[in-house]
Every structure is written in C-alpha cells, then in structure tokens.
Length: 115
Image (cartoon, rainbow, N blue to C red; front, side, top):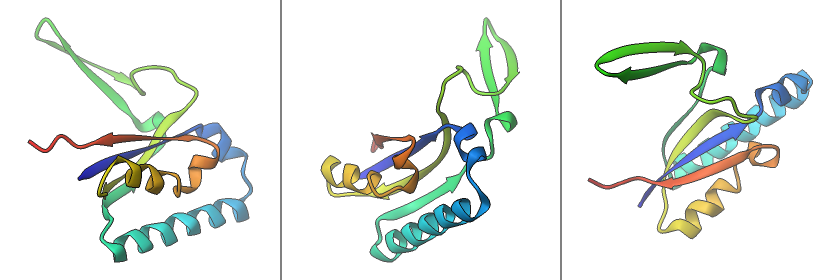
C-alpha cells in the first residue's frame, strides 16, 4: 500500500541551526533516501521551498483568487514529503519515525486512495 509521509517543521527552527548541524541533517536525509531507494520503499519525495514562495488558490462563485503563502497560519509548515510503499500502517509509521526532522517537527502519515 502507498502512503504519503508529510514532513512538518518550524522553518524558524531550521534558521537557528549552525551550518555543520544542517549539513549533518541533510546527510541523514540523503542516507535515508538511499536506504529506502535500495529497499524499494521509496516511490519519491522532495524538499519544498520555504513557505514565503507558496501561493494559495481559491475559486469562489466562479472567481479565482490567489494569495501569497499557505492557507492557514500555523507553527509548523509543510517542508517536504516521501511517497513510500509499506505493507500496512504500522510499517508506514515505522518509516515515518526514521525521518530526521521528526525529532523537532511532525510527520503526517496518509494512505493513498488507490482509485
């Protein structure tokens, strides 16, 4: 079964880290991505640009509006995702717990609707 692992964290936290710590975390991500790629668990994933680059689109009464930034103000922002193959929710949760930023953020685990 396919699951989307949505990676949430506070962008301001990332800005407080020193460069060596950032590079260490990036290495953890690269190692995890390589491990999942070799095992066939990873079906894709990407880091997202900062929320300042986001736009939100709405259509109301046939009229489109576009606003800068995310839809809602939150303390955590969507920073990236992995699409994984897991035998069940328990395995997907185990995979989510291995994502480095789970230590300061959160990972939302969502099954993909197969149709």
